[in-house]
Amino acid sequence: MKGTQTSTRSTGPAEEQADGFSAEERDAIKQRAKELRAAGRGRGAGAAKPDPEVEVLAKIAEMEDADRVLAEQLHAMVRASAPDLSPKLWYGMPAYARAGKIVCFFQSAQKFKSRYATLGFSDPANLDEGTMWPTSYALTKLTPADEELIAGLIRKAVS
Image (cartoon, rainbow, N blue to C red; front, top):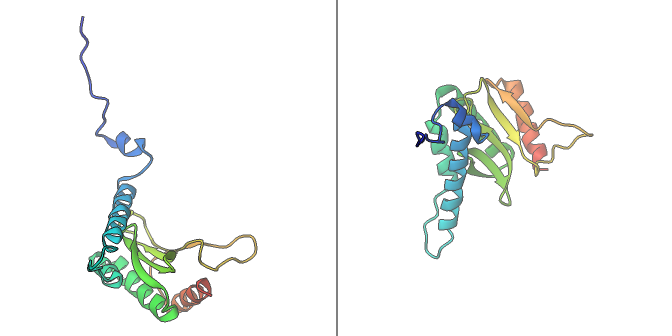
C-alpha cells in the first residue's frame, strides 16, 4: 500500500526559526550580499562606482521618522567628529569605516522590530578600557548630553 507523500518543507513560523535567523536577519544578510556584489562590480575598468555617502543618505531617508531622525543625527556627528571615517552600507544599515573596516554602525529599531535603535562599535574601534567595555548603545532619542557623549566615543574609537 502506498502512503501519501507530504512535503518536508514548512511554511509556518517554525520554518522561520529552523535556520536560526529571523526574517529581518535574513533580509540583512541579503542586503550584505548585495553590497558585496555591488562593490565587486565597481572594480572593473571604467565602471562608475556609486558614492557610498549618497547610498547611506538614501537608506537613512527610507527609514521611519524616529529611526531617520536618530540616523541623521548620528551621521552628522560621525562626519563632524571623525571626518576620516568613510560612510558605507553594512547589512543594509549606515556604517562608518576606516581603511575598509567598519568602526561604528547604526541599526534601526524598525528594521529589526526592536523597541530601540542601536549604535554599535566593531573590533577596530579603540574603545578598550580595562577588561570590559560596552560595544553597543540603545538609542531612543538624543539629548545634547547624549550627543556630546557619542561624539567623544566616536573620537576615541578612531584615536
